[in-house]
Length: 346
Image (cartoon, rainbow, N blue to C red):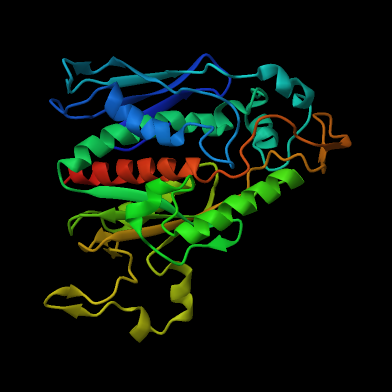
């Protein structure tokens, strides 16, 4: 159970470490004759690239995608697609101070317990740098879904306690947090600046909507569409919770309130989030994910060293203040990958 691969029909395997020479992904199962080039992949990778908001790390990675195989004359060939991105701005020496310490909130202590060895340079495979491969694969999946008029969009509805009250998806590209509420976006900017000065970090909530998904996608019992979506999104390191449709709010409703009345014109409401009995019902699929605060903070914390001796740690270096907004496109990519597997497996 290596855990580096995802999907059944459209299967991906990510590889590489945060401070290794390159990171990337291999995609197996992509059908032939799909238009694909580096520009198509780059469009999604650029949204994940650091340095685009006040919440982002100052690490400067161009994240230029290079297709190594599976594409000929601008079309996929049906053979495995390998995509590579070079790490150009890794400062590994900055992590030497912490190589014998377990950073709170990180996978240092669990990787050591599982493998008896860990790559302390930026966290190795546990680093968010691994998601480069997911986003590249998600871009290929997106190219396939566009042929079926399916569109997945991720946006920020909460950051550091600032909540968006509007849902204008036409403006999410007009602010650095991909927030559908411009007034909330301004408050988010102020919140990030304050937390940054305090040497701390913040979390938030990302909402993802899948539009144009036909009814009938999903399998009964263990391979439910919502189960696969939850698994895919929970596989992102920053995600600590997933809800679909009304989600946890459904626990406070009566059945008469939670049920979506069915009319000749469709469903009156969408508390189900577009999924019933694990199968899509033709409505928009709505998902929200809870994003934890970035664990690398300057604030002094208690920890232990590799010998179990108590000590304290203050993590310096180039770190995000929040995983949002860079995690948004990662969430989008994972939903792309789930939906494309069901579309191709019909």
